[in-house]
Image (cartoon, rainbow, N blue to C red):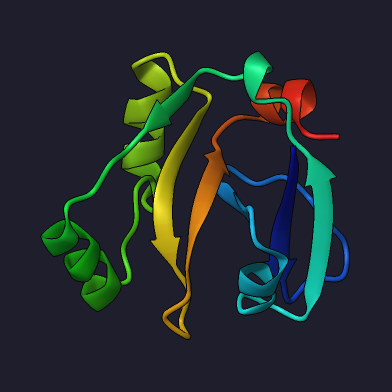
Amino acid sequence: MTHYNGSRNESLAFFPGICFTDCEHSAAAYGPHVAAVEIDHNSLSVLTVTMTDDEMQQAIDDQEWPCDRQRDIDATIAAGYDAVAFHDCDERGQTHDCIRILTQAAWDAAVK
């Protein structure tokens, strides 16, 4: 499945918590350089986070999403997950699905 990452950096490089969206337009809201990759979801253990409307509004207000903090990344990895999937919202208010890759091993296995 094709996913997109928008960045201010010209080259795509892994870092713990890198996010991809299913929407190229939304990826462009995060930076002018949009990279398209294929992600093999079958090779990942994905924690799916479903947020209520109130939780989504709180995330928008705080600009804090699942696994934004290193301690949350560490806890999710310790629980056995390679990635976290959630419904996200860019700075323009456009919602989209997001997958956040947490480990180099998951990146190596799933992102092509």
